[in-house]
Length: 148
Image 1: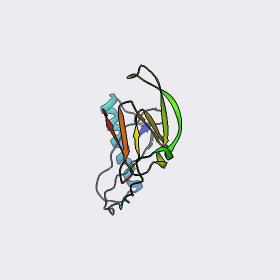
Image 2: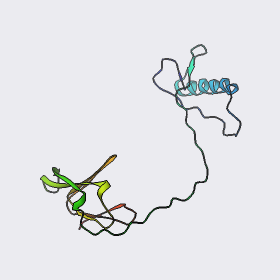
Image 3: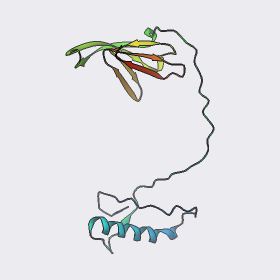
Image 4: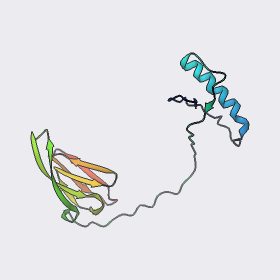
């Protein structure tokens, strides 16, 4: 919550009981905000309107255990996942080093990669420096070892 026009917010917790949320709780939340603002900043306004900016909810429940598929070993050759090459600076080499680039989605169980290498995926890039190795385990996780 914050005063209108402010650029910072104060978190104000709801009571953790299971009562339904209704408009009746708004005055208590505003009072809690005013008290928190006075404690944090040494003053509070009785006339400035208050904004509710962000709402967070937390829930606890039971979910079914994930059924993860175990993949068959496709062999060590990861060349089918290689999509290019790029020079990358590594302090260990004190130089740019040519690195194969692998598409994460194309790596298969059992594939092995020697660093230096780059593994690209939609939401992350994994950089394997020199003296590392990796293999894809049966649940398609990449396990990287250092100091080969």
